[in-house]
Length: 415
Image 1 (spheres, rainbow, N blue to C red):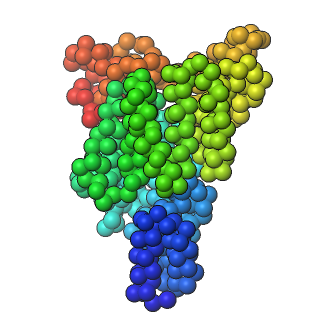
Image 2 (tube, rainbow, N blue to C red; image 1 turned 135 degrees about the vertical axis):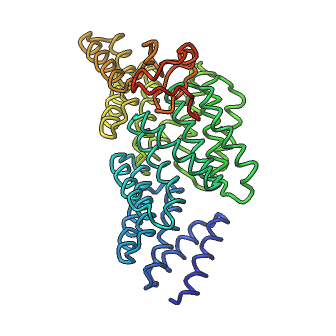
Image 3 (cartoon, one colour; image 1 turned 180 degrees about the vertical axis):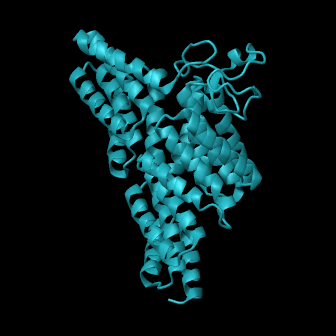
């Protein structure tokens, strides 16, 4: 297949994909991949396949094409191609919640950033690195990477990247329970979509609406949460975005628990069951563990304690395998509650001890006042060194340095 014909076929595939004719686009790209003998063309069409399978939630196929792209980049023997291929390999492992591998491949990509495309790729690499560190509950490292990604987005005037970083900041602050910031950043992302996203993929709008729905839910702004939830789900269903469908079902279940608490489990349980079916297929292990915890709560509401404990046990195994310490905290907290009501007390003590060990390991406390961070809705602020404290403590600190690293500057960071 000639160069011009290959380019035309790839562009035709992109138009089909943007027109929501995904299967036809995939068939066309696979034909190009099979017939093309030029490695540069193979590399580009593999990039299209990686993006498509990522958005469809077919993460194992995404990983397979990413490995093929690495092989193509090595044959081309070009640093630019290798840097991009390692980034895609990192993203694939991030989606499959193999966060240590994702971090390793991000670093491989950064080592190649002296190339001509490095300046433009750096922001995307740091975003993926931050997401992987967040998956391991490494909050300081995650924050540092997100801030770097945001700086590159501003330097390159890359509004799409800025939108994605803002959504990741939303997830970051949801986990640390600064719900004001958890809503602020997704709303900023939604504004970027409104101002600049006329020709962007609808996934950006769906992504910002999802993160706003989470923020509104955390702040008990139920009407706005449901509006964002419905808008995001509508786009997810239209485009067959199964990963987004899963998380939106979990958000809806959480709102049922808080607002329509009378027999909410009757509505929530089928949604959790449906979510579990999808996450098992796509391989998002963190979402799998979260859905299992939600199912456990439904079982407890229906006095099915044995089924609840089974779901908690499975959630623990996944969280332990992934290395998500904050998720492990939630597992121990729920397990302690169950055993406190049922016994034996030995298990209660075990879960309490493990819970506090994880809190110490995560350093989820303010270095100024010594109180916990992330246990309830509180306003937080990061210093330039990326250590996080209560905002009220920083205001009362005067000119003292960071109590963790002793840096002198107390100028608040961007977030």
